[in-house]
Amino acid sequence: MTASDSPERPLLALQHACLGYGPEPVLDDVHLRIGAGEFVGLAGPNGSGKTTLLRSMLGLLPLQDGNVERHLPRTRLGYVPQHASLDAYFPLSVWEVAAMGAYGRLRPWRLFPRGERQRVDAALAQVGLVRLGRSVFSHLSGGQRQRALIARALTVDPALLLLDEPFAGVDRDAREDIARQLEEINRNSSLAIVICSHDGDLLARFCDRVIQVSDGRVHGGVRETG
Image 1: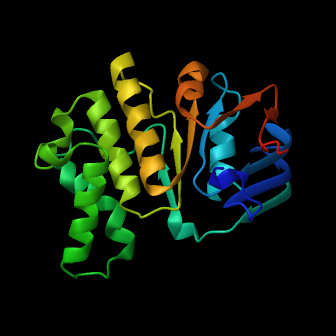
Image 2: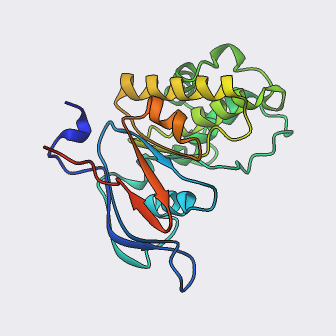
């Protein structure tokens, strides 16, 4: 039995949620539950509302109606956006990019403590980039850059990791590698992960369950029991 089959309260839940940016909702009557340790895919075509759903789960977009429950601190939410704002040509090393996830815990004008350095090293190990820690971020392949950004989100020490189109802009082999590493992270650390992608076939191969987002609705947002 996985953690998501447990009767315990979920990490995050939406009930009768109406999501959008204007008078017309993008998604209506959304029911969604994400349990501890789950590995969930959000599948749907571009423009279907997957990013809107992620933003609402993160608390970046207020609900138009309905309820949201988050049984974890906001600081324990990790996020890898679809288009990272990080300038790929700024001369940062891979290690420095991953370390950005720790900045929220550091006091101003303090040296980077040893414990945080170890956390960054551990995050890079989880995504297989330890040997490239000193490499310049802009010199990496698309798949390696994406893994560095995942390491940045892992350095937050999340209980729930949300990724928006992490397979975009990388080739098929790199997508497989990213999905496999996320699956391994999920299994080894019981970290709950939600991946948003239009590649439903890839999600179905690696995720515990796949939620479909289409036609203004979320289908399969609550796992059936019994």
